[in-house]
Length: 114
Ligand code: 5GP
Image (cartoon, rainbow, N blue to C red; front, side):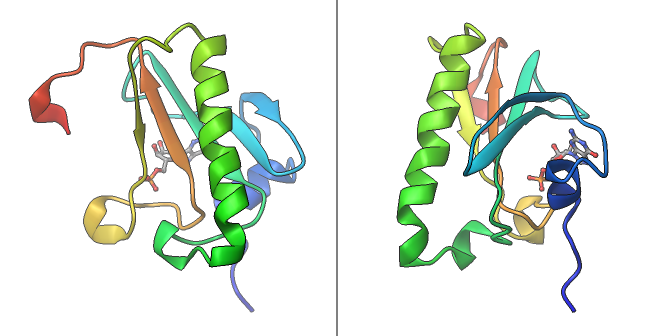
């Protein structure tokens, strides 16, 4: 049996989180350890482990996640300067193996911080 991900447990309200938005396809929460004044996570309900595991049938969902990220950026007032990050795999710093988009904003971005 595959293990239920941390984010599925948040979606199922088994673990508390600051939920900012949710719809039938995804949920948006505040990151518990923010790397910027605004640090949200856009998480699909479908527990795709990594972006590299997404299928062609997930393309509409992936587009939806991007659209929600942009809407949340507008809603939180960071739409003039924000960054979207997806860590894929341990080597890239992924720690939760349930796809999520980091939406980072309200900070000074520098070239070195990519
Ligand atoms: P990753 O490193 O996989 O790209 O990102 C995982 C993110 O999830 C990290 O930024 C981490 O701070 C966040 N995170 C880990 N555990 C929790 C939790 O229990 N609640 C919330 N809201 N965020 C979490």
